[in-house]
Length: 164
Image (cartoon, rainbow, N blue to C red; front, side, top):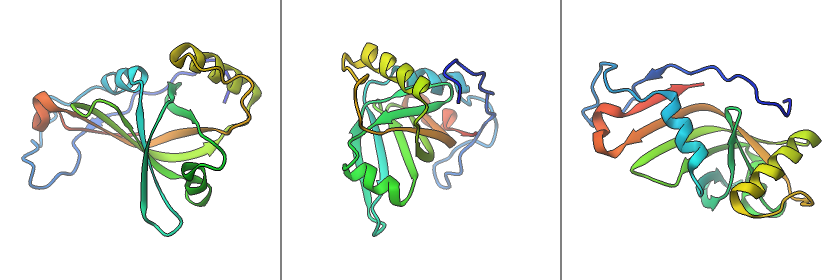
């Protein structure tokens, strides 16, 4: 992926399959993808859920960046997250504010592009006041496959799914 911003297509909003919740079948009230991206960019803390090699779940709070339609984060090479992702790259990323939740499902892969790593380090330092430019820890990119948006104030009317 080039270090410069790339144009990301806007996924279509649809309803998630949520039997028993009274979710309407109409498209009225669906959240636009821009709503999700705003929350993905502004969130300070994120949740990542991975699966251990035995299949049991693992969730942890992480810092990260939403850039060019993907989520980037770093973690220790020996961390439980890194070990889990080496075995199974599928993961879930969630924003910090559950009342305006964005949940992204995808796969995490290491990125080694020097230009992208420099860009990540600069933006990460600006956001978190944490210098990553000399870090040797891995940086992962999660490209979303599907995402969900849930806005508590209008939960049933706003429940949204995006297929990316």
